[in-house]
Length: 246
Image (cartoon, rainbow, N blue to C red):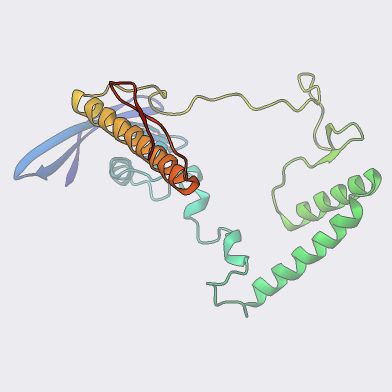
């Protein structure tokens, strides 16, 4: 697989490129053209393949253009947080049966902090003022540690959420009511009775009749056994209207 720059159109700020991508498939040579736009000031680049928009990985076409323009560093937005080595993974701190790193000091400290937070929250939730004070103090601690936090909320006596952060101003459109989420239709074809072939209809009809006949035979066998156990005698009516007993 090879990529080549076929044409370049440079304006004052936005530069446009056409990249040809070639590959071999089943012994045949195929190619595809991609259009790219490069901002010469911010080094933001867009490609028609949309690999970064779908998977968060910068495509080979963009890297080719950046290399041709001697751009050694890409913008920070192209290095997602999940690709960083310093990303905090919470599941690595949870004690699990398959995890053998229970002696890790970092995991032990995490467990101690969680237990302490749970004990404090259990006591602070009894009072609204205590809850608000604890939320404010936690917000200050998070700022001092450089941890980005969302606006913390408390629960008012009427059950409606209220924001406790001083940095957030109430919005006119927010009336404080918690509404149900918007109904979203499920993906794919809606549920319905699909068309069945003749073979499927015949097989289903045979299964239904077989189950009915089996249930009828079972009922008749139970009735016959009950009659035999009670020694009940029934008259036998013949053509001559004579009655016989067995």
